[in-house]
Image 1 (cartoon, rainbow, N blue to C red):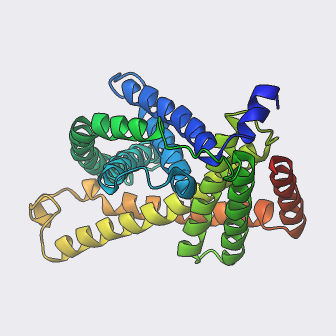
Image 2 (image 1 turned 45 degrees about the horizontal axis):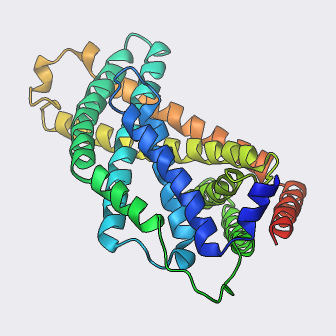
Length: 323
C-alpha cells in the first residue's frame, strides 16, 4: 500500500467510509449511463453489480455513516435494485433457454420456443418497469446519497476510531458471517442455507473490493470469492428457475386436462407436435442435473477443511494488516 493509501486508514472512520462509498457511487452513475446503449449487452449486469456493491458498503458501514441516508432514499435504492434483479434474471433465463433449444429434439423444441416467448413477454414488462423506476427515482436517489456522503460534522477532539480499525472490524464481522453461513450448507436440499451462503459471500467480497479500491492488498481472495459466488449462483439459479419451470408446466397440464391450451384454444385443435410439455420436461431435467453438478462442485472445492482453514488464515492476515 502506498503512503497516500496508508494515510486513508489513519483517517477518521467517518471520512474513510465516505471515500470508498463515493468511489462506488461514481461507478453506479457510470453504469447507469450505459443502460441507454441498446448495444451494450453487459450494461444491465454491470449496473446491477455496481448498485449491489454500493448498497452493501452503505449497510456494512452504517454505524460510521451516522444514518446519513434517509429511509426514503434507501427505499428508492432498494426498489431500483429489485427491478434490475428481475430483468437481469429473465435475461439470463432467456439465454439459457436459447442454448437449451439447440440440444432438443424436434419434439422438444416447441417447449423451448414456448418458454422463450413467455420469458420475453415477462422481460418486456419488467424492462418497462425498470425504465419507469429509474426515470422516477434514480437521479434523486443518487443525488441525495452523494449529498449525504460529501459532508459530515467532525469533532474538534478527533478521538474516534480510525478507518483502518473500522475496516478490520468489518472484515472480521463479514468473515465470521461468511464462515457460519458456509457451515450451514450440508446437503443439496439446503436451498435457503445455500442462498444465505451466497449472500454472505457477496458481502465479504464487496467489503474486500471496497478496501482494494483504496489500495488495501487482498491478494486473490476476491477472485476466489467471485468463483464461489458463481458456483452458488449457478446452484440457486437452477433451483429457482427449475421451480418456476415446474409451476409453468403444471399450469399447462392443468389447462390440458380441462381441454384447453395455455392460449385458451381447445387441446384437440392444437397439433400434438407443438405441445410444449415434452420440451419443458426435458429442460426441467437439465436444470436438475445442473443443480446436482453445481452442488457437487461447491462441496468438492469449497467445503474441504483444508481450504476453510487456509482461507480463514488469509482473511485474518488482512484484518491484522488493517489494524
